[in-house]
Length: 178
Image (cartoon, rainbow, N blue to C red; front, side, top):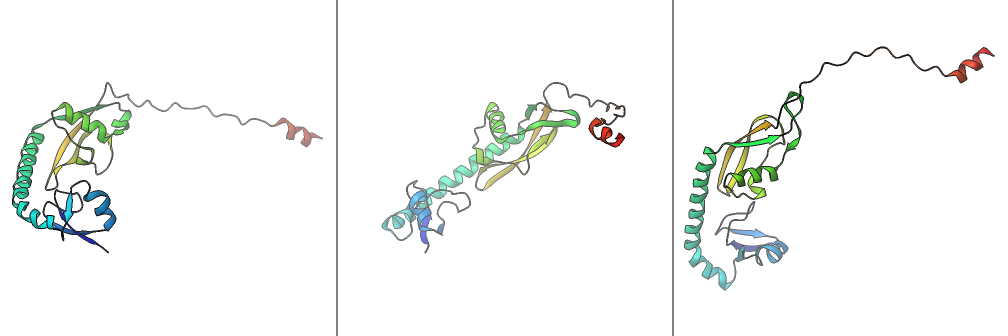
């Protein structure tokens, strides 16, 4: 059985402010209602909430506008990450989301972990495009330049090996002589 609720704020993968959705009772009772992210659609509060919905809609629009302003500032940034790299431009490890959060913080942007979306791990030097979600309705692509920290070692030519003689097992050779 599902419970009808009205969202009091944007909830990822569920809806935006004012949406009437059906969720499982445990999700509503244990997460959405205690966190004040939603109210029951059948209660007296919901009637009052509908009156406040206009105010919340203005608040949501202001948040979207703020996120769009941040998008313009993000596009103008030059994001660079320095990592140790081996031959061929392969990184030792990969660029992680916490590292990206730290680089954005150094450039004046406070982002949450779930705001940065990596399609695949960054494991090579060069320009990589990552998605940054600043609001449920505002998402942008940012180019991150990954550079080698220090010099990239040159791959050495393989050393030719002399043929190695196989060890002789004396035990079996002695039996053959007898």
